[in-house]
Length: 106
Length: 151
Image (tube, rainbow over all chains, first blue to last red; front, side):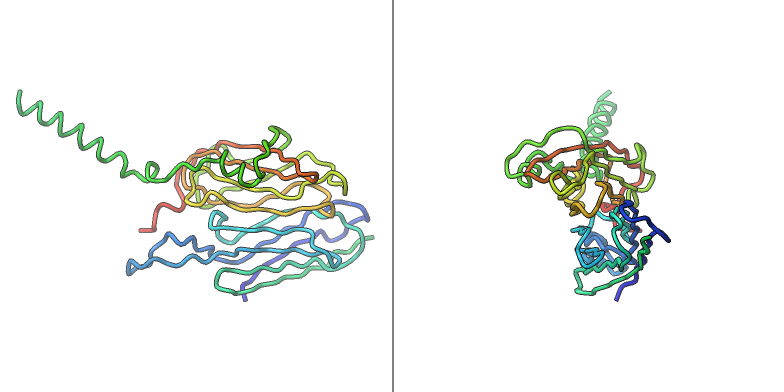
């Protein structure tokens, strides 16, 4: 399981549009590099990221090797009710990761 | 005189031979218009309304901050459904695709990308109702990503 961090604002008003930041710890191996023995390192990137809030999908990303190592995303969500904001991702090696955070809406 | 002539010719030949060997020349230039047409299904995207924020000079191509903003109310009737980030000079032209919707509230995404060489980055925004908008930004890259294989 790869590591990640998700950041939501500490508090939000209903109807407010808030920024969600997601950072995934992953080398995003592009498949063009060689190791010390000259062998090509196979491509291994996080190819899909999905973010859910209040039970529905609010953001999805399809990625390739053009995204920098330790992929970072900032996107926006309209806060409606207190609930869990969760992100889930999958890399080429089949390794999954997930993080969650609570968004408190007043 | 003969020797000088030979040296001049040899020098020119060596310079010509070394040009395609540079990493920048090796990288193909992708036809962004064809790629855009493939995504839109032939529809011609409107220009404007898509802001692509990139540094004009990126010191490290491995790590270039990118922010995309689309002027859209993000309502159920009128919203951005997808943002396609396309590169004309990276080994793979499709950098990323972001899917948004009315719950997003704001059509804005920030990330960090790799750029092989100085190039133009195109963002194609797919809007609800099957319309498309396009925006682009030029970026100069000092230290390239992708092509150097590490010392």
